[in-house]
Length: 452
Ligand SMILES: Cc1cc2nc3c(=O)[nH]c(=O)nc-3n(C[C@H](O)[C@H](O)[C@H](O)COP(=O)(O)OP(=O)(O)OC[C@H]3O[C@@H](n4cnc5c(N)ncnc54)[C@H](O)[C@@H]3O)c2cc1C
Image 1: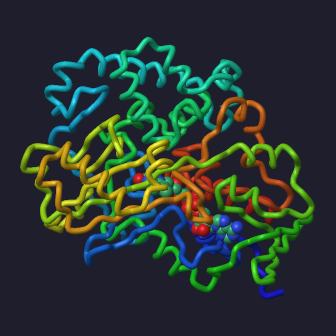
Image 2 (image 1 turned 90 degrees about the vertical axis):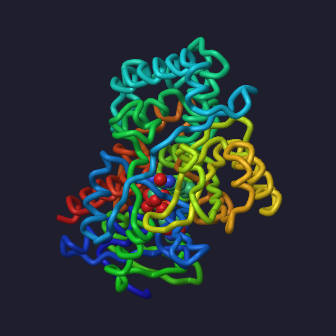
């Protein structure tokens, strides 16, 4: 036995680190076992050029992410607003590249119909409890169809349907035919801001960034917990009885505690061997929570030339390779940075390309959309997540048809001394950093109650 603690936490992502901090503050001894050689999980900041931190993982918080604003303030991490001024570019359904003004002139009715559908989604989502989506009055019908099938039935024009698909895949990172309609409504309901989820406007999920990069948060949390954190310790087996857990990591390392919080995504949690085996319903739900696929590709230019031309750095395109982009300039720096998103099918296809070919295809798109000044970035970086063995996809776990109504109740219910965290178990802003913190609060609450 290498070490004993009160509570073992599996995973040093945001949820695991936050849980450990809360337990320590409550007077208990946590021990975090992290598989990777770094902390942060789906938060990963890399600097290809000095002073330009880029977010390969999580980047933004939104106005209602109150836990994240509080945490950033407590850790002394400053924030700054996402740049928004200017027009978005559109290229959808063979229109060629259009500026926003022309797009709205020609397709204003299509945009209005998308907004009507978003308003309907808000109304339906309001009947879904984020704590128990399976209890919604129409849960059975909504869980029997995909979000894509429901979208198809709304009588939208090709432009409107395509726009809605791209915006939704931008949240789920899988095609809408892979996700239950109930899951989409749950996702909207966990955010509590309805259609604003789809925008970067006030109330949306992408209004605010962190000075120095998002990993400042997890780095600082980890620094506070350095005596309670072990890296390169992939948990392989958890033996559990009524009042104790014995946790075995790769290399024969063994640790013991009174409780465990497994703060990793459900699909990865199901790869741990539990002894005795967990109830079938728990295993079944974790078998059915696949991660989406997303890649972020960053172009660094000498200056943000698109801003002078009146553009906000955003495009929405069904031509690809990327379907969306953002201005990702670093506050206080003169370089220009654009982030292109490859999500769902785009990520699955283009991550198999070698980086040089992928970069060339993306630069061709940047030139098509933003003009010849986009041809020569001074640096390019992209990041993929399915190849990372301790994440295996992103942004989060999505449920297909019949999963919520059949197995949803087993997702976060404790089993003896085992408790479950990770953003994928959250009921507020599930999939986001805010959700990671919320899930940690819930799991810590359960542990404190059971230890009291
Ligand atoms: C590309 C991308 C963009 C995103 N953008 C945003 C955004 O802009 N805003 C936002 O709010 N959220 C965003 N997210 C989501 C956000 O990153 C997550 O919600 C959050 O970081 C999840 O934290 P977590 O602790 O729940 O899980 P994770 O970060 O997945 O942490 C789990 C940890 O467990 C470790 N682990 C796994 N298996 C084992 C094992 N067997 N033993 C020990 N350790 C193990 C992993 O290495 C990892 O460190 C994004 C994510 C990605 C990938």
